[in-house]
Length: 428
Image (cartoon, rainbow, N blue to C red; front, side, top):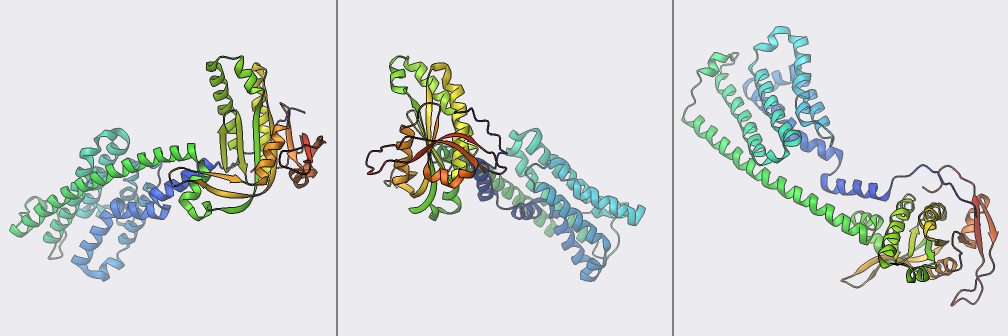
């Protein structure tokens, strides 16, 4: 048989699809992330400024003021950027204030600097940007005190607007001198003190929730690794997205078996440490190339590999790649692998007891694939007549001697794979 060189564009792996599913389950959609960012961070100034404007001037002035819409657009842009997982929290928190300032200065000129709320916007934007920059980028271990401090800062934003409402009840422009000489009455002192205390409590609660989220993500990562090692990414993905698909069903699947020829006798002549090292190296070399073609499950049993694929094309290309790698890995030790591919209708699902279950397939197709592999010499690939008929226009084969399989009344018709015509898109 020729040495096959298979080079196809890799498709999205099942691991990446599983990662996307888990991210969706933990973090929601991009719209969820956007709304969460807007309501928990970027939209705060807009929300409180809107309440203040409506309180002081009413709806008509608010909806007819062009600056209102600039601020809305600026905060939406900031929320969109910060809702991305790759955003930089310091610079991202300055997008809204910078965008709004540049546009409003262009329209209002120097009058921009006469409005107190612009200074409030810049001061609180810089403080929040600095705190989140420390928390997310510069000193992640500082979250224990940064998170409560962020909450207090947001509470102070409410206090700032409360003072603005108090000073601007007569509708006049507020200046810095008024703020400096402002003296809160007893009611204001109670309200301000209560809000600061509430802000601290909310910050401590947010810290606890953040810790729980981090623990949940860490636990999810561990469970994902354990599940993948035991079940495979396809099964874990299906269990998360559509558990009903793991119930017993009849499906058309392609079964691949690969086994090391002469492994038992080689083990008798080789030290156990070397056997373990070679077998582990063999698994680590073959599994990644088998995974490129999106197997539904890969199982290792002693020196045997069983892989389940959705289509014969995937199974054939996986066999080619696996055989090439196996030759390079095992040739120095004078051993090689036989490989076989068969396709047909199987029963698929989770088998086992309540305590121990595993995803696999059973049926005559599986038994036949194993019998074909057992009749395959080292370095060769045997395909069943079913697979050959499915792909005969692209395969070059040689007929095998009829294979007598245990439990079969008739011999098996099979083919030894010689060459294949590569077609763009195959193996995906």
